[in-house]
Length: 124
Image (tube, rainbow, N blue to C red):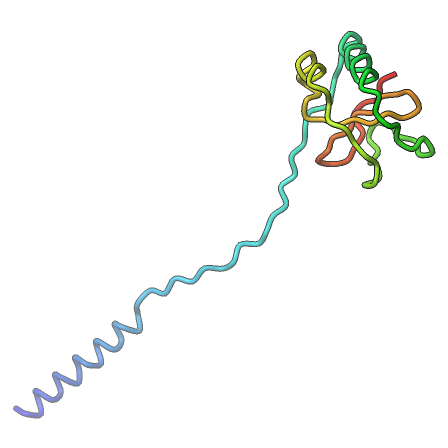
């Protein structure tokens, strides 16, 4: 009978040991960082809006950007070029340009997306 008890105890210990080893272990893998790119819709301005923007920005009399580089729609500007925020009067009259910055080049207003440094419009 003693052998039976010892066998039962040994069997219980083995069963509990296998139950413990069968517990679920949850591991987490580090999530890779993702680059989120947000794009804005193409900037479409009416002739009246272009006139308002140009007129109000020219009144600001800011320092012109270097004219030795050609700035065309779709090109990126160098990081050392100083950009100005759009004046409040322009942002109220033409809300579509509120998020953009600008610079003056050879008497022309160049609107730039500050997130991408890309030229989005030229006004003269």
